[in-house]
Image (cartoon, rainbow, N blue to C red):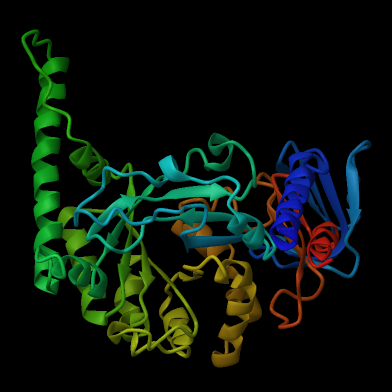
Length: 421
């Protein structure tokens, strides 16, 4: 029993540390090399956070009295990393009972004390989108959260963030439902299921639009159309109150989903996994949709055979908004190392690579005015590394969300050592 109890003690100690918040939401980081991402590098810089927002950033700026100051001399300070495709803080990620399930919302299943949140904080990640899986052609509604470990659900969810609906093409839905002897078992079946659902949603929207118009005109004998939770979500997508993240690998299907979204005037924000993206980089760039994927995941199934780490330069030169995703509870804490791999295979500027784990995913989440770079007025979400974040030997030593320290390497490593005793 000693080992399980040790782990329990470890996590309880971390919870106690995090629950105290360590410091208030007013905080100063002083003396580090500040990588602003959008406005260059500030040597020996200072970042001031008040009430959770960055209020000043620069060299030799006055520090308001009474604010906690952390000396980060010799360290690297950058915006908290952003992961726009994750599945952490969820036990159930696939409602694999129907190929069309937009009526399920992932925020209903968030686990605010999931250990993976702690692990991901240890990699400097402060914001992520945690998602429905890829079993269904139309999955559930994803949710964007700040990694405020142990906080109430409503404090973790990023309010004002536009939700994104999960779609999936390719092998997964056709395998899962083909094995059940139902549609889709083929790619053309997947296309039919998707088109049928949105045609039904258009008709549903038209009924509600007609009702609202007649009600506004003063008709008294009206009865509202019957509510349908599936179609309500798809109606939100048609109204662009909700965007889309689509799981897709092959170049032909990338082009197909871009055309489909144009056909129905849908706001597709990210092509996830998208290993063939470099083959159609110009098409993706022209669409304005983000590429979200990995550097060196390939060959694990047929549609992933053509993954190419050198494709990042092709997409960058075409003008694609490139995002590095984790899609994994383990990989979430290593986003910065996966970004470093881009430099191994592609001759790109370091600052452009850092954008792939900061401001670019913020854009893919419609949150670039709130997170993703260090600018006055943005959230005080910060990661501090002991070496340059693209150095293969670096580690994150502080992860800060809205001015509050949620991960402290020194304190948490001491807690971790207790586990091994």
